[in-house]
Each structure stands twice: as C-alpha cells, then as structure tokens.
Image (cartoon, rainbow, N blue to C red; front, side):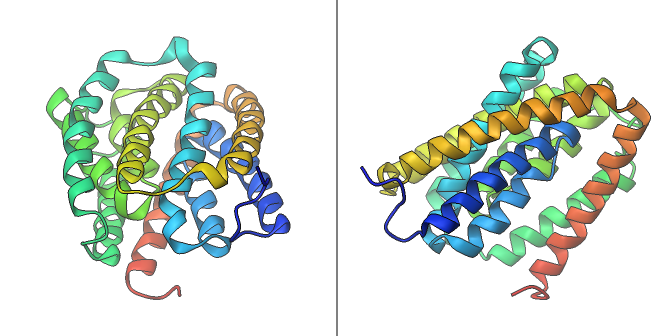
Length: 251
C-alpha cells in the first residue's frame, strides 16, 4: 500500500501531519479552532470530494484522544442527549448531502455563534436543557455533512452548562466523536473510498494525539477566567470568518 493517495504529494502529506498536530493542540487547549485549521489546510491540498470525509476521520482520531485524556470529566447525560439528536441530524443530512448551498449553512452557523457568544445565551448566563442538547446534536450533525467543522457550534451550546474547563473539553470531545463517526458512516455508504488514505490518516491521528497531550498541559496551566475569555475571542473570530466566507470574501 502506498503511503500517499494518488492525488496527493509527499510534501502535502507531511504538511497535513504537522497541521494535525497543531490543530489537536489548539483544540485541547481552547476547545475549538483545531478543526477549522485542519479543514482550511486540507481544502487547499486535497481533492474537493475528499475534504469532508477525510476531515471527519482526522477529527474523529483527535477527539477520541481528548476523550481518553479527559474521560473522568465528561458529562455523560449531556452526551446521551446529544447522541439522540445527532442520529436524527445524521439521517437527514445524509439524505440531503451536497444538495444545500454551502454559503447558506456557513452564514447560519456564523450568526448562531455570535448570538451564543454575546446574546442572552452567553457563557455563564443560561444552562441548556435536554431538548436543546438534542436539537444541538441534530443541527450540528446535519451541518457537518456540508461544511465539516462544527466544533464551535457545539462548544458554544455546551459552555453555559459546564463551568469546569476540563468537563467542557471532555464533553465536547465526546459529542464530536459521535458526530464524526456518523459522518464517516454516511460518506462510506455514499461510496467514498477511505482505503488509499489509511497510511496518511494513521500518521495524522498519531500526530494529533501528541498534540492533544501538549494542549492538555496548557489547559491545566491556564486560569479558568483566561480560558473563558480566550474561548469567547476564538468563537467571535471564527463566526466572523464564517460570515465572510459565506459572503464570498474568501475564494
């Protein structure tokens, strides 16, 4: 088996391994940002049809690593409600994949992030109930079939109810593990071949786990107040970036 898929150069593969390490470190330390970083680079070097499914595998490996590291802090009931909604969103998204305009989904996600960060549901002001957790799972799993990285959406939903950053990172990772697993199953059923990518994916997942260990050390080091402020800044920047992409500012 070749190390690289036919459409990829060795240099591009090495770049993706480095990005997988950096993306996991970012997400383990702040909860978000790594998935968008990975998909941005992946979209620039990989065939368009491979971007979303391959990103799903990379992020699955990264999130499984965070689940393993933070498993003692995961809020399991929250994950259970999220799974219920995710199953619904996965079924609907799988039946409509590639049929909806990507810019509409990006704009909706960006607006939601701004509202969740600065509106009435902002951090520390309101807790989310089981129904909204299920809705979050359904919506984010539906959207991830089209734009890939919905981690900011999910963490903005979980943050009001999880005031310990380790619980937030661990629960978020568990929810995203479910979401990316469903996405991989959908694209597999749609006929995408993961086999040529396996060696590169293994290298990226290993690099991602090393990045998770580094990012977790930073997570324990940073004070809670600084972590929350950094999270809000990240969410705002990512929301603006999504809105600009939806408006066609980026090509």
